[in-house]
Image (tube, rainbow over all chains, first blue to last red; front, side, top):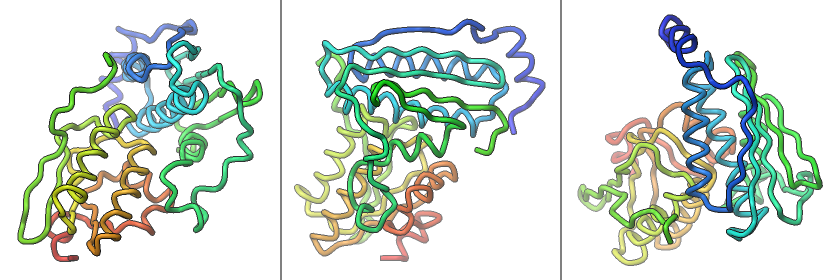
Length: 153
Length: 121
């Protein structure tokens, strides 16, 4: 458990912005990395535990990789739009790509014995496990995720 | 090209008998950018250097994505095809949970520490 005294002090002196942040990046993992680092920096000023921050980071990585790699096919001309809000008890993010979309229900269960040795297909599962809520929209082009502090994971 | 990570050595490799112990040089690794390079270096140990008994020490690893799991699965197949064995050790509890969630703890041999791993070969 993190020191609540230090965390509360950090929170009061350097709060994450209370307004949503909206950015647009090209389909470049390096640009996504910068956004991830900024989100992590803001999360460190909240009351989220280290385990919860790990959870958000992992789900965020999976969602951004999906947008860049599967949605936009690494086409640098295609954009990824990211809108997020960091509160002391809650993190919300929406990630949208410019790909053809997909049906999340079509993704096979990666834990099924016949799929266990496939090198890919685990991203959605990890997003759903680590975030409080995951919802797809726009034919699969957008994913919205929420993490509540002191949730089940 | 500007987004490509520098192709420096990402692995520390030590041979103990006929077992190759592999450690990772970076803490925050195994994300999509780094894992491509790390995967190539891991595969090279088997494909080019002919190593068959690999013990991967995750002692330095703080963070891992599903892309890394994919590389480990491919590495496991290469090692098994070569008649060898792959063992993982020293995995942080949060990372271990990723293996458990994805049921990959059933696929890989996972040990507590390096000494236990060496004895498993």
